[in-house]
Image (cartoon, rainbow, N blue to C red; front, side):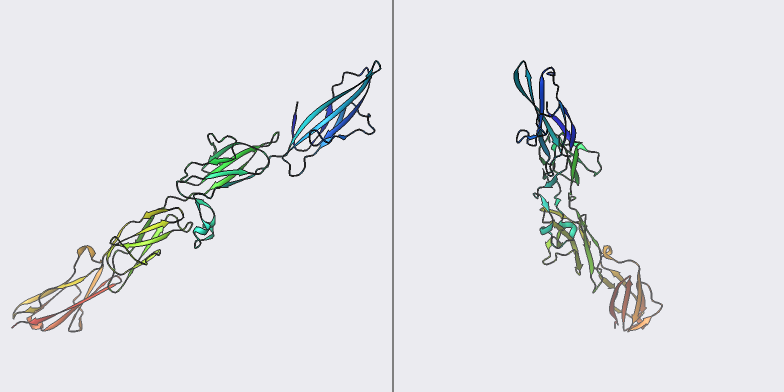
Length: 366
């Protein structure tokens, strides 16, 4: 039969010889190519015995070597010469050496598609819910099977119907997955090679920031995505359902009230996500009360915000009469009588970082 051994081999080849009653000689030969050329091992010829010790090494870079040993027995019985040849084939397998696994660039992105992002994004990554093709090449050994796992340390699950193929189509992947190919070279122990297929998460985004704009001020809205700084995306802002020309940054400075949202695009994968909507209002202070008084009557001016749903909180009030601060007037209302007129009343309202002011003249009526 054919012997299979792993790695360099040294051993004795024993010939079962039953012709001891006749004169005989043994000559041993070895062939590194299982047939030619044959190199004699006995010097002088005919000096061999029924067994011979061989030491064979596999050449560097070879995964398998086919060696053959030959013994030629010459014997003479009854004056008749005979010659018998016996061959002993030996297969030497090199240690199992893993090759490489590569993923098809199809459905992969990174690098050129995102030159402005950090270096991490130049690594190939599979788009969410897409499949790819894995190809195993090189190494020493034959593929036994493919396996996969969601963790680098397992547990590992056999890939159904993968067989010994060097090409594997993955399923559509929704999270980073590890693939392993198990190989074995002849009589040697098996080995394996793994590849990590990074998968982008499903793109999602939201905006956050202010909900109210103070007079003569602006507020900032910010987009955040589940990509973080790992993967690239582009942005487009909308106000009241209309695209805001030129507003394509991560931040938006808002000076006008309205409903704001953004669309976030992963151009490399062709996916898009819409953010939540933020309604931003602009408080408007109003003064209500009379513009004139008749003799022997009183009046009241009241400072309120026009839209109760767009009214800041924590406000403090100051009143001035004809430019002079009224230190005791600290409420949202101020009362006066006919004798106080004619006068101009001004209210100054502080609401956190917001400042409002309005004035109204009140006349004496004839």
